[in-house]
Amino acid sequence: MYENIVVNYLNVDGKPFENFIVTTYPVGIRPPNEVNMRKLYDILRQLSSEGIADAEFKRDTIFVKGDDEEAINRIRISEIAYVGEERKTLKLEVSNDLNIMRALFYRALSRYLEKRGFKLLWGRRRKWKKILPLDITLEKLLDQELALMIGNDLVLYRGLYVLLEIFDDGGAILWVDLYSPIIKLSEQRPLSSREAKLLGLRDTYTSYIPTPRKRFEILNKLLRIICDESKLIIKFADGYSITFTCTFPTLRVH
Image 1: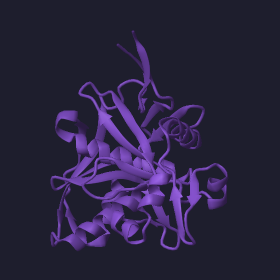
Image 2: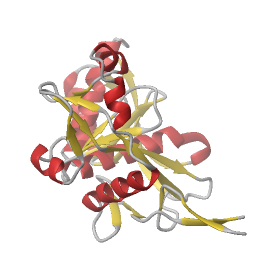
Image 3: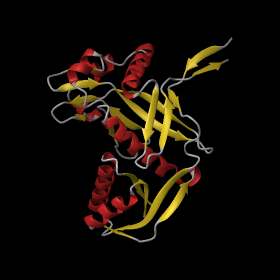
């Protein structure tokens, strides 16, 4: 007897990471401390948000998709890093550059989501990224049951976890799951599990965990807002684009 199971990922069109080209420069943080690292990543986020360049810093190197001259100029002006003159064009490889490829994709994804009223929360030490509709009016979200008031300054938001998985042949899938944090409206941030516990919200939160069917409905509702005509087209700052089909595939299992 066979059973059809819906799997919560989006398929990519073709093999977009098979020929994934970037420009690189050697970079040295001066001095190499946490403050300067934060400043560098602030610059990278701003470059991406403005659509100038999607860039990542790894292995004492800046990897850029987009206007590399403007990206390097901004880093030099900041005086937080030395940037060498050696400019290279590099094809990234999944076996060696997976985290860089993912980081560049998430920067382009974040810029796309901003235009849809969503924010991508980067966090630390996590492969899964969090997406929340923080720039869509609360009234609209409440009406669509994508937010629930649970206190004077507290709202349970419906958002997404996403994870890009890239295969050795350059193909990819985008895993998607439901993310339902409690947001403190006045600060526009999710409560930590410790804060929620101190406020006595554990039982309240548990009562809003959706059934599997409802979970699937919420996921699709969010995807309809994010996608265009069942397609998610993520364009990098250099014009290169990656397209996902916004429907979950069905697997037939024995």
